[in-house]
Image 1 (cartoon, chains in turn orange, blue):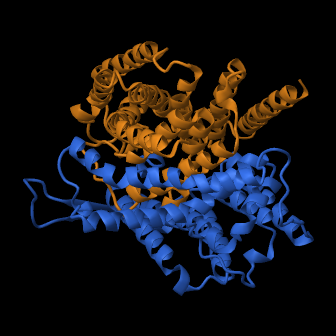
Image 2: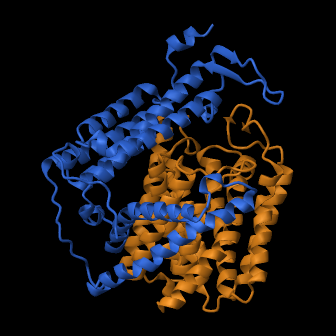
Length: 309
Length: 289
């Protein structure tokens, strides 16, 4: 009980601290409101951590929350792999060229795979810490809300552990994923003229000088269809089907969280945050998940079978 | 086999501090730098970074590769920023044009044009200095922090044992997996795999990445069994962990922490008062015809 109280009080204290800063800050400088300060990034870090904490509270009896030696080592391996792949593929060493204005981040499959295979704690650490180290290595500085968003990708992929039978809950996850995909694709068609993320002009409320391509706009839908195909083609290999399906929802929610936060942090209008930012990153991520996750899962389970561990 | 960062014990300014104190100062420095887009403030942070570099004792010979990569990266993005104005439009809406350079040729009917403005120039310089300050301080960490002290330093900063050890292992694994990636790339090249020529559509590109990512990942997981066994044999996680090395704060460490916190509080205060935003020197604006 004492432990719970201290955790909750710590979270409340962090939030109160940021609230206090905002309250005092805007009195000193009227122009300084919540949507104009970098501190908001940390508010979203708090919100992201709160989401994780609430899920933990609700499901704390589940053994997926146990962190032993194995999990600590996998956390470190996942985070290091995510950092090194981010550095190699997104830096200047070995750049994967972008296609049709989409950002190709093959490294994203690492938090998805580690989350699904080793649980939500490993997935969250892999995504959040790996993204932080990757950004530091590449020289991008730190975007804490994006690190938390990446952490959520791995965390949600790991929620498959909530179910003893991996088939359980899969259809619901697909239905939720389908609903998000349809909604975001419809949103794209309603805002198809929204430009991509190269320039931002607050005066004219535009972001970039060219609308995103149809391929980028439809990339989430294409990715979802691929996930759906994998789900049913690998119906008998439930690990492959479940890994891809849970990674899909993790990607939509995690990247969605980070894009949503930019509505307040970077003052992006919703159309810019979702059409200009979410679609070109979450869509290709889904395509990566649909192609690379089955290969990783198949290879891992083959090795596991061989070693007996 | 684990590969380590190129750490060496040196008589340097950074290494004269407790690693916890240095990490706290580093975080405060980085957060403070991110508050500013004003060249005058950014030059102050660049000054701190330069002081740390020159007193770090890290030689050019040993860190050449890292510096060349980072400088190439920073210059590439700064030039890109200068050419396109990428990102700068968040800070200014009007531009004072110096000159407009128009190419004598056309590309598929498009004539490349470069508009040089005071705002674009200052923004590119700001970007260069800002990223240089942060990355150069980051580069110094692996060269200056003893790998044996990663875990105990994170523990000393208040993280739980398991998370501290996880962070410790993460930092140790990064160079190892970097080496594994190079080995895998060489092995694939020897088999005729043309990594530099990843062509084709999106799906073809993704498929061609599998021979690089999958072996490195699976090898890392399979190889971790030895580490897990070694940790289990030492009863990792059974009770509160003890660390071989102990860290003690000295007066100079407390001064450094206080300095970092004051720097952060100062930056926050200055930012709250509305200073430190994007600034263009008046003489540059006057230069525009």
